[in-house]
Structures are given as structure tokens and as C-alpha cells.
Length: 323
Image 1 (spheres, rainbow, N blue to C red):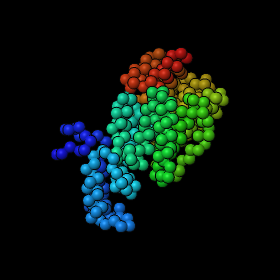
Image 2 (tube, helix red, strand yellow):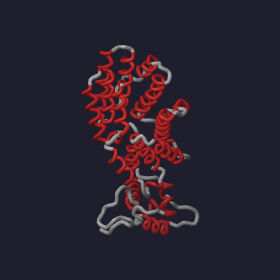
Image 3 (spheres, helix red, strand yellow):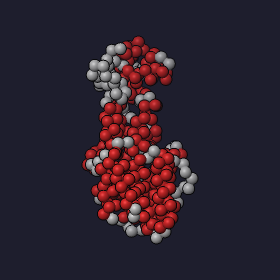
Image 4 (cartoon, rainbow, N blue to C red):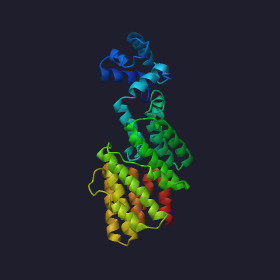
């Protein structure tokens, strides 16, 4: 088998190649000719387009040129690849619970043509932003979020989840850097087209960020607790259930209901474990430390943060120690 252009000899290409993109489209539409017919523009003929596509699929992960752009503009990337990129770009995905170095490696492997030339690059910007936040590199996160915002311009409603992600992540950065958090959160709209799981996760995140502002800026723990209590009691997704019960645990702790707070914090840890959310489990252990004062929980959380090489989690552990 011949090597793809631009690859080291003997090394399989990482991410997606133009050849794989074209092969996926051929599988979806039946034949290369069928793909070519969908690219017909004034003055083109099917035979010349087929020849151009054969050249494109030999480009490996190099610039796809004019025909690569036409291909991406007409078809985007295969649905299965889009789903994988989306998994890397959403904060509520367990992708963010992998060791940081592994997350960065995966993002870099995919951040090359044809993906970097497609609209799906939005998810890579969002994934890079999440990694930057885990490293407490807020300026880098802001740059990646600005890139995501630019990449989203003109895209249709299929990218509404990416728009929500970009706003929520930007609001988080603003909360850490003294920006206009409320103005960003006010722009978050949850459309009816969201899946049930996505809606539950985004709603829980939106409430969590608004409640944080009530707790920290306005010293209104009762108001924050009421927001968490208003979230649906049904357990649609482990991430959403974790956010709900962790928020309720802190609210009941502030209200002096220690037994209920500990019960809810343990529930939150269980939801984190059920969903494979290692980082959330560490946050739940930190929460149990703050509520119950058991240093063993904090030691376990710090061990998780160290294994994940997660600077942001380690900072949370340090703050819990100081408290």
C-alpha cells in the first residue's frame, strides 16, 4: 500500500485524510459519479469532476485546493466524523475527563486538512479552549473561543450546540477574568431541536453558572439553591444529574442542612462515576471535603488531578486546603 502524501513512510495517517473523506461520500452516495453530479456547476462536466476528485483523494492531509473546498462546502465531513469531533468539543463529554496530554494529542491529530478546512473545525477550537481552561491559560482559551465564534458565522442550526458551548465557555472565562458574565449567559438560547440529553446538560450548565454568580457575587445561596432545585428531578444524563445534585449539596450546606448536603454530594459523585466523568468525581470529592472536612476525600481528588495533569483541578484542591 502506498504512503499518503505528507505522511512519514510506514506511518498510517492520523485524523481524517482526503481519501477517507471521498471514500465516505462514495459509500454514502453510491458511486464517485453520484458525488460528482452533486458538484456540477455551470461549465463543469461529470468526467472532469471525477478526475478532480481522484486527485483530491490522493492529497492525504495536505491542502485540498479548490476542489477540496468545493467538496467540503457541498458535503461537509461524514456524519460519523462530525460526531467524533463534536465529542471532543463539548464540555459535557467525557473527552474532557481524559488525561490532558492525551486530549491535546487527539486535537492536534485532527487539526489538519481536510478537517481544519471544514466547518467542523469549530469543534476543534472548542476542544482546544477546554484544554486551555484546564491549564488555566485563559488568554489561549479566549483566542480559541474567538476562533470558534468566527468559524460559526453563517452556519445553520445544526451547529446550535456549538454556539451554546462557545457562549457558556466564554461566560466561564469572563467569570474568571472580570468580564460581563450575565450578558453572555443572556445570549444562551436552548432551541427545541436539541436532543433531550443535550438540553438537560446545557440547562444544568446554564443554571450552574448563574447560580455561581448568585453565590459569589451576590451572596444569595438561597436563590442559588432554588435554581438548582428547579432543575428536572428526572435523571436524563449523568452530567446533568451531577451538576444538579452538586449544586443542591452546596446550597443545603450553606443553609446548615449538613446531613442532606453530604447525601447529595455522595449522589453527585455516583452520577459522575456512572457517566465516566473522572474530573467531576474529583470535584465531588472536593465538595465532600468542604462540607464534611474529611481530608481523605481531598487526598483522593488531588491524586485524580495529578494523574490527569489537570492544573485547574489541582488549584481547586489547593483552595479547598486553604479553606
